[in-house]
Length: 209
Image (tube, rainbow, N blue to C red; front, side, top):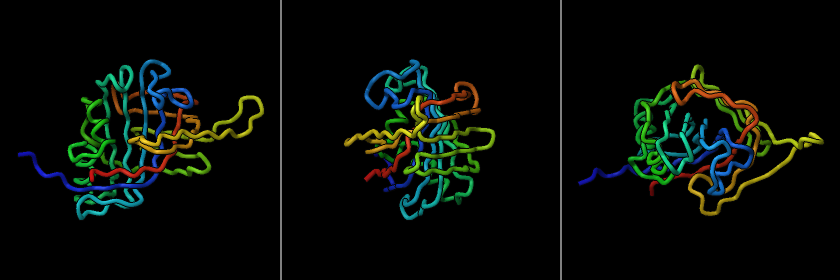
């Protein structure tokens, strides 16, 4: 008999950056811009719990790489979890992100990332302002990014665009930004560096209920 899954829910703000062009074809079931996908993502939990363990205020990030389109699988990833988490919170974050306790987001990414490395516990410096389309992430020795609004290439004026996915499992609506810098140094396929590529800033609300 399978072990009972602990009920959890987490909600907050997230920013995902990748090597695709602005808009990211993957959001439209098209192939990635360069034929493969490499990404750095970070999320801040504003409200959330795993069973009776509160997760509010914690952060987690990921560095991910696929040799081709995400849906073809064989991805490699590593989670970076908030070093400020207590022992119970670390257990909870590890359980949730593994995908073994349900929740579409984590189950789907676990299925396409069979090469999941042991999680790292680090200080995660993360700031996001979805309305302004600005964000920054710094995890010393592992990954960092900077996002800003997309600008018109002729006038330099700020350009605003959104993607709305009414049935999306990752988000329902996301602001589009420009990742002026993405750097990852997590080893092997998780080492990469990009400039002026895709960034999405969105609220998230995930659960296994």
